Image 1 (cartoon, rainbow, N blue to C red):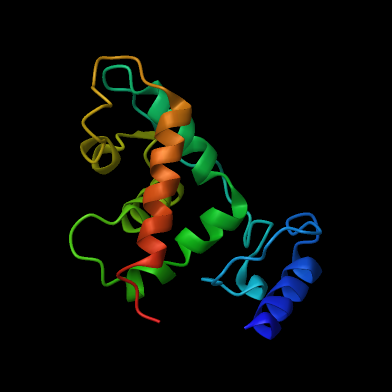
Image 2 (cartoon, helix red, strand yellow):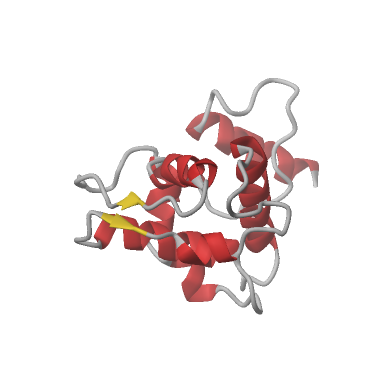
Length: 154
């Protein structure tokens, strides 16, 4: 499958030259073709709703704001492409993030409570206790990756 790896590497270098450096192995599987990844906002948007901070969840809100306003991720989540073909039973972080980003960017409210995300927090993130933004980001991105690599139709 070295031909496949070479093709993937060539595609990635063409579309994302800064991402695939010499000697860096290309991903084993591409979940979204590079032509579908839009690095800029697909349409101009006003800033979305802010986030309420129930019991020291500012570390959650900081990460959510960063992810919500990252154009390639937000464009994908706004398309609702993941949830339209998701087959994951129960908890799916991609579906939760998709709903969150769509809610933040489409609501007329000035602020929302990220309830679904707060309710999904692993047990080691306790409400009322300061949290680690890096740990929450790592946990969130890992759960999103897991959702993209399992329980999803081809």
